[in-house]
Length: 434
Ligand SMILES: *Cc1c(COP(=O)(O)O)cnc(C)c1O
Image 1 (cartoon, rainbow, N blue to C red):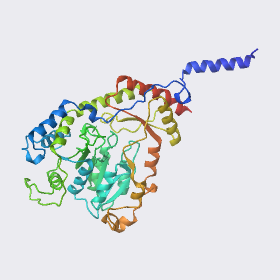
Image 2 (tube, rainbow, N blue to C red; image 1 turned 120 degrees about the vertical axis):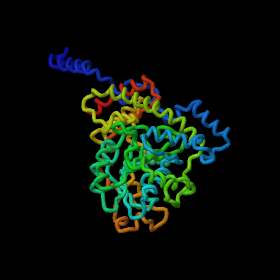
Image 3 (tube, rainbow, N blue to C red; image 1 turned 180 degrees about the vertical axis):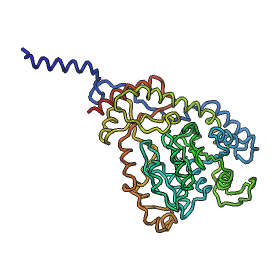
Image 4 (cartoon, rainbow, N blue to C red; image 1 turned 90 degrees about the vertical axis):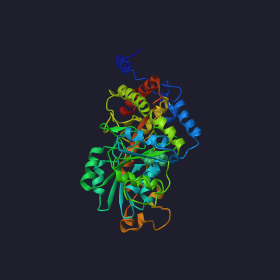
């Protein structure tokens, strides 16, 4: 016999369960959303077809894989540069061998050297830091905000009379908030170097990333938007910077420039015609690739938008970002980890923000390791006294601990995106409510 009080309690509990209809999480033994984990390979190579193949065949048939052996209207690299500049709405583009090479060329073009300081985000790729140090200048780290990009408000307090350049890096498909960054640069007469390596083709209020600063650079390596395995590009609309960049990337040998600028002791970062041909074919697909990626991401955004208490990654221009990942924020690292474990069990794994490194806490960077001792970057009083490590970027560390996202892929099917939606809808409320 069941007494009345217990009966009512049981009935109420049963009613709640059915009203809530919360399915059992896979991490607690329920059925997963998918059996085969959601995941996709790099974007660009999935679009390889006869177009890239034809470009490569033409280079083979020409017997001239060196760009400067070909006339401008025949060189794959030159044609790529023209179309790249048009796509990025800049006057000039220069093809180089990698994104790191493009950064090195940009440092030389902007005349960054010993005694200069460059402000860069604490969360970005090694190349950003390494090329500042290679130039003999001093890297100064700024905190990121919840866009995972440099926090515009963190820049001004770091400016000194030695500051020459601010690096605005557009990470994981998301533009940095350029309006306040450009305003600070104008006010303090600083140069802006945009690194759009992880956001090739994305835009900010309609302007292509890379076109707003003095120089923009891009990586065309395999894990970026379009690729020939390796590759890089630099854009600018300033003829002086472009000439310096061209000279530096080609040991200063080519003389066909209008000015009397003359020799710069540069290196060789020239692109070959095979790479140029593949990148030309890929560039002509760029808007298809990012269109596919954005369509998939927007489906997922739309499918979860109504969930209560959603905490999104900050998107300074949701129209312009690429939709690389559907990143959500949590109250603690522990909560983020519980979300990650539960999503993995559902077959829709999430990742912490990735593709970059919290540079100031890399032990070798904290200890200012250089190619040889007495490197100019760290031999001045300022270079000796500057401190890296956890103390210079506590907010960056905290933000990166609290976010995780489903990575998107342009080739996901509608079913894949529905699974992503279903998993987030199932897991997120359970984690945030708990
Ligand atoms: C990948 C990357 C680079 C370096 O590009 P490589 O082509 O690998 O040399 C530079 N900056 C950022 C932000 C990157 O993600």
